Image (cartoon, rainbow, N blue to C red; front, top):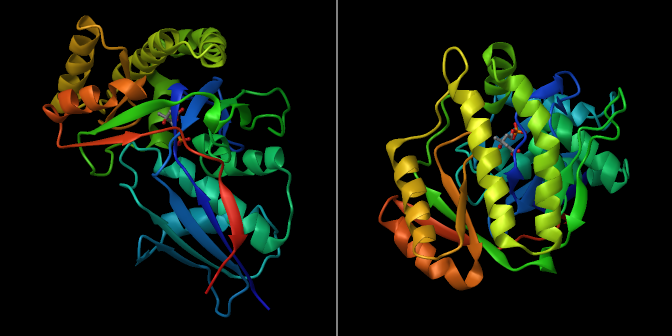
Length: 325
Ligand code: PMV
């Protein structure tokens, strides 16, 4: 009899960024990072362990996947058993996929959790996070809600490079205002973008060297609930990361005119005394960190610069349960 489990995971946004790898096969990062998990946005994934037929069946947002995207899911499932049966994976996101909104983080966290339960492998959270990392680096941080660190680790097999919860969802009631510049797919994926950065950006070594101090600073800021301190280091990490992207050959520019417009709105809000700080990932969308009390003011100001604005609080741990049919 097949076993069917459904998992839900929320995407996370790095406040100190991961960009660059120290090991490609194991997907180990060149830099440590620290993230906050988002509420409301989620991936829901159901895994059926054992179906008839010659191939895995993978359906994302209602459309069957084929080719390299489906192969990537099959290879990931192999991590739960080399001689596994064929499986069915149904997954959907309630937010845009692959547009710099961290959909791969929630996708591989939910898939890891559902596959582990359906396969009956029973990995502990740290081991499961290290497996999720191999699907997509940022996914190792989405098994937990709240604030999560991802250290580089020392072990050659990558077993100590996984998410580590720093503070739970209820620790600090801040919000991330997402300014959606574009819901389209990004021009260069993070894997290809990181490789190009490692290979051609002359500033990459300096980026790697500066990251541990940024994580230490952000950790102190989160634990002290010091928004200004966190916001400053988040912007610095963001701009350093995008500087490495812009200085690759050929250049990777994820920003659009509306990205800069949103940045300017945030800077003007700060001049008016509103505590708001921005971050961007491998895409044009801008995410703004602020106190919940300022969320309306910040989203109203951003609404003048971009098409759509969403206010998201800090999210909860990923969950898994037997599927209900
Ligand atoms: O692990 P990936 O492939 O989702 O790469 C994530 C890279 C950034 O979103 C740009 C930064 C981060 O730490 O999430």
